[in-house]
Length: 80
Image 1 (spheres, rainbow, N blue to C red):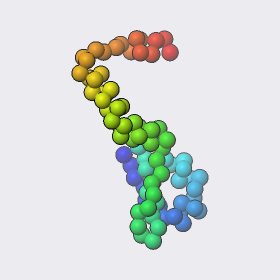
Image 2: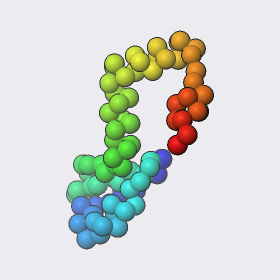
Image 3: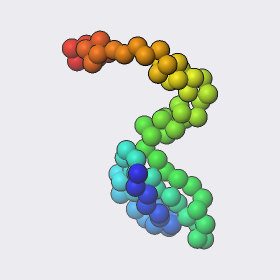
């Protein structure tokens, strides 16, 4: 995971470039007056973080792992 730190002014002056640099595990930390205030993350990463913080989601992952039932690539994805 890569992290880049920008001041609010740097972000304002280079917003397009900053947004282009956020992908996958890349995170931008935004500071104001030297204090970390916000983070910008890729939408897919945010969805992953939200999913992992959901207790029901974690329960289904545990149940799936405990079941020892596995599916082949073809069963899951078919002929994509």
